[in-house]
Image 1: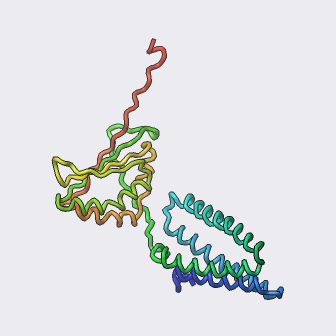
Image 2: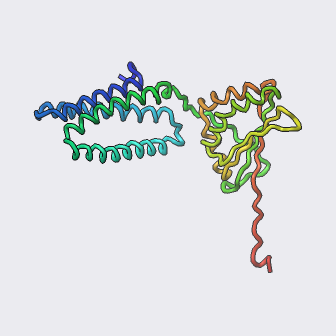
Length: 255
């Protein structure tokens, strides 16, 4: 069904089936009919849940998939728990059948609005194939806990392209921050217009090494517009700087 209808129509279908089940449960006075309604409601609910979970699994890289799915579960069950209080209050004020029927109508309306405002179509085409950066050769090997680390990336573009390049760097900023950068900035060299310096800081060298392994094929595609502004297709110049931490003198040395 998901293959033929796509995620948005699948979610809408699941909502319609679940809503119909709620109406049946609200009006039924027959045990067999109630059982049919429960089975249909379970099918609609599971269809929605598995569709969302499958999309999350397909769009989240391995390094963040566990945390992403955990956050998804927190959102789903928190919303369900809060909503249960509301529907219970409505049932107490009116009746259980009224609460079930109203919730069925609300479910279909909310799903239709979400389908238009927050479509899922296209989010299942994210390519999370890892494309790790090559680790630089260092004259000295920093310790994993050394830091913070300052990374500068020099992009050379035509002076007339500075504004367009700055806009194209928006996805790059989001990727750096998402992958572990504590801060990010982009600066234009006043003495050499068109020499754009990107800088970002990472807490430790170990975290920067992890950052190198978090890039995906979709990230590379998002950087393509910015790379298109590079003069003669030359690669950016990258430097790594680390904050010095002189060792404290030993007590006997201080004496």
